[in-house]
Length: 432
Image (cartoon, rainbow, N blue to C red):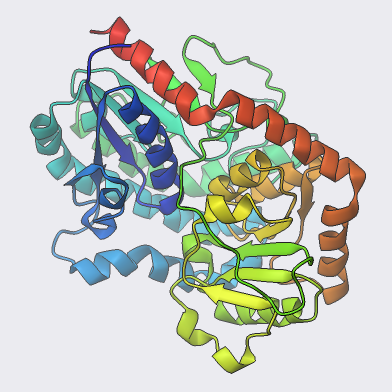
């Protein structure tokens, strides 16, 4: 263990990467280091709630109000709800392209304030969890670590499905078709990004690449039970799998449901952004009202969209749950394929029905099903009978139950957050 060092964590402006970094930072603090979080003002208070210092960098127009910043990604997602019924390849021209346009803008805006904030923090190590390069982190002069909290195909390989494609492992024609279309659509956005990199003194990237592996250390959260067989093995001196990073969260007491104490517990969440499709959420709540389960449903900030009198007696809705604590008690989870929820389900041995709508949720959904840890289902094109049968199979199928139990044992033994902290500590010692 090194002496206490300052570690700057710079996660993406989204709850998944942010909370993964919290899990790692908690373990770094246990080793005597001082984690400091760099974040957009829209995320103010999130890391302070876990006891960490925050420093702010505008990742969008600083003239936007705090409320506008906080609502930006919610509004962006809600505008694309009609596109989320489309398969991934048909989202390239709309949601995926516009996402990358916005992501590139965050890199540009952050470069105006990030160098100064790094000078103020004076970190010994910088950890970035994002899908795009922030040049100041590479140029600052201390080791930097890339954390990949999304699916492992964010680090590409010729033999595995392209990032965000949702392709099956062995459907190579689909791999090629998605990759070709992605490069064709994204090229103008990428040219603009390369011009920005060159203005910062950074070499341009090939078409389709927006970030590079760190020459020091790369941490992938993806768990072994879902990993693909790569053609080009990743160098273990630079790439380490963490088997998930489940943060410590407050305990949760499941509410009482009259006459249903022995019924299976179901948890439903589409993440911090996915609850905006309130019509779909209402349909799911109504469906769950006819099922023999106790149900906890995360409806995000849209609680008021649900008439309390219409919420079934076996369903409890809330704007937030301490998710790891809830997943640890659940018998089955319905979710959107976010990497946090996917990892938490496997970590606690909970099978899932994954109903993806965008980004790497499609990759996780396909991988969960083809490795026998649950099922995937279209987010809206399903019948009550289809969803009910998949839920029952998650609860009763001995193969699925065996697979998630084995994944849980493996991941809990690995203790990804603690492993990450040890690797960061070793890197600090090496470059002391």
